[in-house]
Image 1 (cartoon, helix red, strand yellow):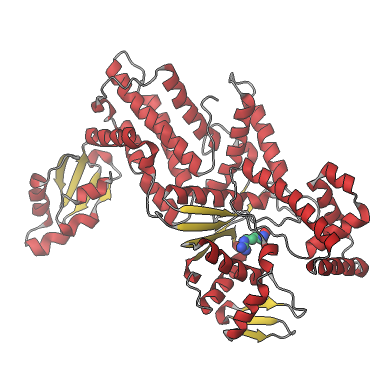
Image 2: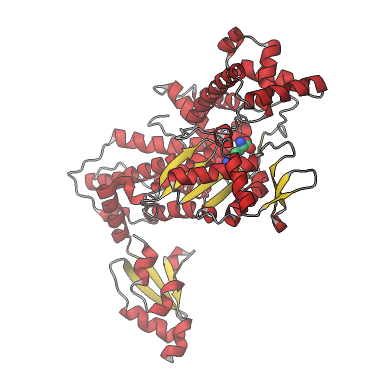
Length: 552
Ligand code: ARG
């Protein structure tokens, strides 16, 4: 139920959009100023408010007071409790879902790892933000296509293969997998200033582009090793993709794209003989280098078109860091100039930088914060934190707590804000942390284990009308709106903040009220509140890619 809308229905039209929630609940839950009616009614706002307060009634209103030209509404908390619990018992957490996306398809391009390199701390954000948005979109009724548009094209692979040929062996790759091929690449890069090596890498890449069978076999082998590792890491974070085709696959469509741009008179020859599109304020986008090779942008143009042909998406989102802002603005604009019908349905979802407390990560100096190390460390540290607790399945709990802490470090704040990833404070059981929320959930589970819900006992909603209970129920009542706000601004942290607030409210509630009492009706009524709060936490945490355990 939308309380504001319900109130609005009881008010004169002019006042309907003026309802606001009050800060001081002793003066009512909502208030409305009557000043805008003075002219039409030819009365003072004070008198108007007095008169209206005597006539307005409704099931959700307990009392109306007129104060200095304002109407103050006290909500009937009994009615809200009944409505929320009734809805939940009928629909479960579907009560939080929407249907704006019914029959619509959204493609999300996220994670989109460059396969020549290890996944590192930077990929945490794109993978987690993208996956959370995918879940939020699904909860809003969209069909979502999850795409990991891998970077599997270009000279890095020439270098990697050269490194393998110089220093590697089949056995080594079979034994050490992704670590072996990474080492070849890194080792080769140390020599790349030497022209002999640089030429070797270029030649190898050219041969690869011309489908040299031996090189193609090595290339495919390395790619599959790399993709397997990427799949493993992404799935630890809860992200499983539908489509893994990357830049290499789409590069076959480059010639057609170049033709299309030429026919549309968009292509010009730039200073050094490159083929460019001049986008005025948005600068120049290079489509082909002077040696005729394509660029990242060229391939993105092809990919967007092919994706549309295949998925007929209503929207396509690209989740990358803010540094790629111009890249996306440029190629979206080119598609617009080509009159593509989907050009205005492409969105760049940008986020800020995540760094480690020690300072910037540098991949060149070999001091890289690798994703696999970050995830391992999170689980190891979570293990230390929970080791003295008496719980079943400590390994499972450590994994859920550790990964949850990492995920929440990314999703707790506005996505565009820069932040520092500090696993030690993220694992705190108090404060704005994932373990705090997971623990609150587990505590609800424990109460319900101790004293299960008995559906045969009729709930007496009057036990759920204290301010503390009302705050919880109101938040749950509005949680579907929270989900749609997160959707509209592509901002998972809106959900994070609400779930955190809910957990705080539940802890306040425990503090103030005894849940399990001698009165069975009272206990059962309160357990309904605990149960729905627990399910809301779980639903909300799932939207932000955090798992829960029933005991911790
Ligand atoms: N592989 C790119 C990178 O690591 C990100 C790709 C994002 N998606 C896209 N369609 N451009 O920077």
